[in-house]
Length: 195
Figure: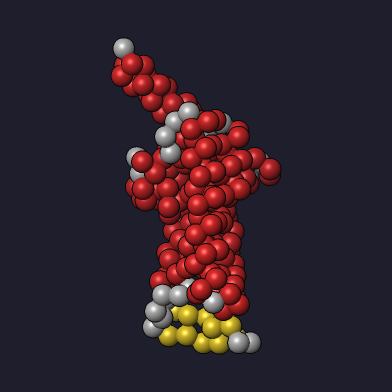
């Protein structure tokens, strides 16, 4: 049985799926969403920390990057315990990796790596939407969903695609029906605007 409100995975995934139904666009997002999160954590590594400790010359800060990692991780687990736990683990790996890379590169190189990666990944996603999906990205309709939930949805989509994973039996069929309805509504609105 699905959860409701903020933790309504069916609703959130249907919203996401309605903007990501083209296979090429889906592949582009699978390729680019997690690097956006990783490089965001990399630049946040350099924000002031309340407390920090060092492990083999790598400084591990308790800062905004860690706070976001915790928020993302807990939220993903609340959405779905199994896939969410994997998502949380990937978030922690990204955070730890960003700490190591930030220590290794320093700010003067890290911000350049972040800038280039972010530009490439965002352009790739906009191309996916413009050329293949032919629909504006979800971030124009729901900014929080685009930034907070996108990494989890890409992960969940990959788990479904490659391993047949469902949070519970019937999840994919229920969500697909909602996606189809959402796409039909969007196409109807688009048709009405044109006529």
